[in-house]
Length: 129
Image (tube, rainbow, N blue to C red):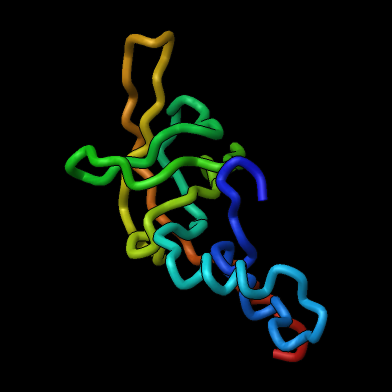
C-alpha cells in the first residue's frame, strides 16, 4: 500500500496473512510479488545528538554511497530518532549500519549515521515471567 506498494510480508507481518482462506482475493498476486521482492521494511535508530530531523523520502546509503533504500517515517524521541526505512532485503536485518542523506536548502548534503534495530521491541516486564 502507499507510495512503495508495501505488502504485509515486507513489513514482517506475513505470518498473519491467511493464504489458506478460500476467498482470498489477490492471493496469487501477493505470492508472486513475494517471490520477486528485493526490499523490506526495517526499523532504524539514530543516537547522534543535534542532527537534523530525518523525513520521509530521505535516501538511505551504504558506506560506499550507493542508494540502498528510502525512509518511510521517522520520529524524534528522548534518545534520538527512530524510524522505518524501505531497504534492500539483504540489508534489512538488525545491526546493519548505513547513512541517511538529508539535503538542506538544496545545497548541503548531511550524512547521518543510523543502524537498523530489532523489528519488535521485547519488554523485560512481560507478565508471567
